[in-house]
Length: 478
Image (cartoon, rainbow, N blue to C red; front, top):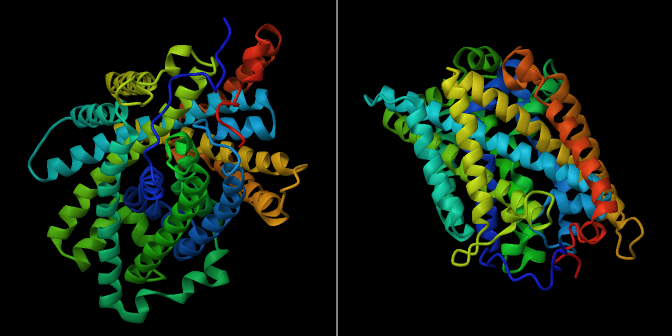
């Protein structure tokens, strides 16, 4: 059967997204409040302690270099395939198909992990206020809401995510102001940026957690086919998202160091871990504000769940459209103009994995969250590094290449991301929080997916040459 060309295919995603809406979708995937509560205390305690704010700035600078090249390529390519499309245009179709499969696994894994985190924290917080329900009930409620919004036009998700993101960032901003008001100049200790603090023990671990905290920022390109002005909105949304996340994380972790004390931050964070920011809120804002922070933590996790679900949908939709996955996934809903079948498939996958963990009696946090978020984080950073290399390759012989935007900046981004991959692999048990061989062996799935993708591409090139030639060509270069 011959696949219809991109120009004649009737199913189209609806172009409703503006730059601010894409920013909401992207920043929500990074879950700022959840990152502060869940990741920063670990970076303090087993990373480089007071030097964590500087590490966030370094990670942000690395990812901005990546974004410069990513944005330059985005001005030529408009496609819901994200990394899949960029890999195809820069490195080749076999690597792209492998990358597309890795992306589906990675984004689904992170989504499932966030569902587990949502169920765990919702149960814990509700129980503390007198409402005792199993974590599975909370997780099911979150998945149903995710499924409802993910099935519909992405514009609706963007509005919901915008409200949730503004709430979580506002409460952290208020906490930052309160800490500075109470502590004065001591609330912003310059010691956090001293060489002794930045390059102290645990720098590699802190960098690993910092890169993990940015997961989701790169998803702007996935919404290119739904943006009103994609060649402007996608690059701009990526720059804004990276800048906002980096500055926000660095500043919030810096005020936390000031509130706790440079010399005490490692020990205090090690004792309190996930309660660290709740403790800071109690001290500087009061118990009522802490209750609000706890509720907003749950909404932050739901926002990340929905944003990551939408990102995974776009990959499954594009891979279905191009017959890498079953063609039915490439359908667009006639009313909502959204990839509804891809959304249903992601929802079903999420339910099956969460139900399997629940049936096995696994702890939602140490089992489901640790294994799935660790797996997804590694896969997405692998794709980011591959995309950075693709940018350099794509522009290498083009007349519009530029020494900074299309060569040096993406090369620096690739180098930094490669360092991040090494840190993730070497410290993978720290990322997952377990020594279980089954959990720490999950990354081999990417090796299998890569081999399968390259093998399938070679078969398609011989057996389905027309289909192979159309890989990643839907609405690409202008």
